[in-house]
Image 1 (cartoon, rainbow, N blue to C red):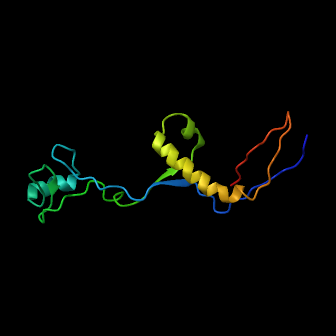
Image 2: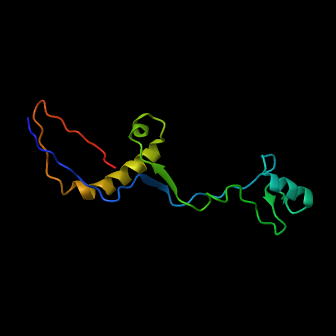
Image 3: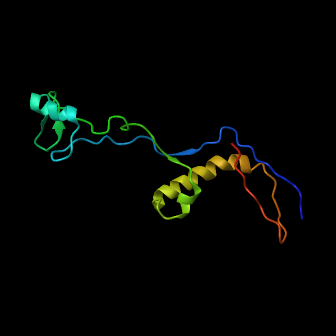
Length: 128
């Protein structure tokens, strides 16, 4: 049995994978639950619904329902279990896998080939 210990150090290891570059803006539609400030704004005449049923302001601009997340990238925290339990959509899983292969290949290419004999095992540890 071999007593060799190999160690790969990945500086600034990325724990999140980018899923999308930016998220779409969502708009309030008639019949949806509104925030309190918009309910009072409708009563005061600051907001109203247009012909298509979207909530608009006095300048006829649609009111964004997700102003914090709209336009920002979406990330997925790396979780090996979620890759295999079937809860992750296959296209998202494919995107994550491609990103991880590209990201980790730069560190693994320099690593020598490890040949294991019968009864020998490879162990992976994560140190923080």
